[in-house]
Length: 210
Image (cartoon, rainbow, N blue to C red):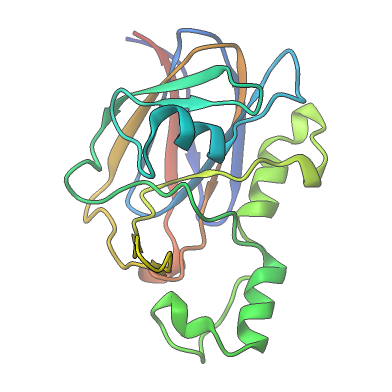
C-alpha cells in the first residue's frame, strides 16, 4: 500500500482532496460521515443519490456496489464495507445544516435526534462542512450534491414510506473503502451526529494506492 494522504478530521468539520482513478479512499469513523464526489475535470458532473439507487436497484449499498453521477457514469466502487452486518449506509437524507437544526428546534422536533428537545444544537452542519471540503474547486453551495451518509442507518417502512432516524452506529472505529473510477474531487463531513455521544466524533480520511 502506498499512502497518498492520511488526514485527521475533527468533529463537525469538513475535508476534501483530489483522488486519481484507481486510487482508494478509506474513511474510518464510529459516527456518521456525509460523503460526496465530483468529476475533477468537469465539476458540473456530481454524485447523484437517485442514479446510484436506480443503477444498483437498491436502497442500501455495500461492497461491490457503485456510486453514479447525474450523468450516469460510474464514479466510485465500494470495495470493502466493515459496516455490513451492523447497519446500512443511507441514500435518502440530505445534509444537516445550521438552518436545519434551527428549524427543528423551532418546530419542537429535536426529539427526532434521540436526545430530546432541550439540547444544545450546532450552528453549522454537514452542508457547511462539504462547502468547505469542496472549496478548492469553487463549488457553489447550491451545487453541493446530496450525500452518501456513511454509517447512518435509518429505518424505512417500505409500505408507508416513513423514514426514522436510528441510534445504530459502529461501537468502535471501522472503515469503508471506495475505489475511484474517474479522477475526482472528494469531500467528507465529520457529522455533528446528534444521536452519537458528544454529538459526533472525529473521522480519518486516507487515500492510497493498492
